[in-house]
Amino acid sequence: MFTNLAAAIDEARFLRAETGRHHCITQRPGGVMYVRQERNPRRDIGLKKLYTTR
Image (cartoon, rainbow, N blue to C red):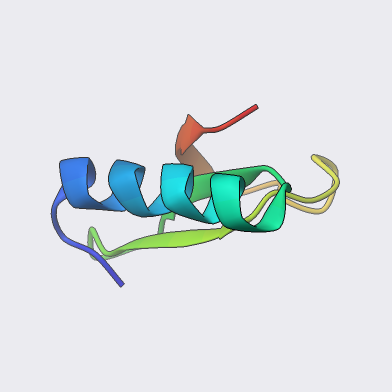
């Protein structure tokens, strides 16, 4: 859970390097950002993607 976009981007890049999988930063209602593994775009409908490592 992040409130700073720069820190969340650093975490997404780190996880991409460690796992070899793409990660994205999504924003939930209330302004809280989460770094999570990027999945099927059809399943992510309704989530705002702020950044992706793809």
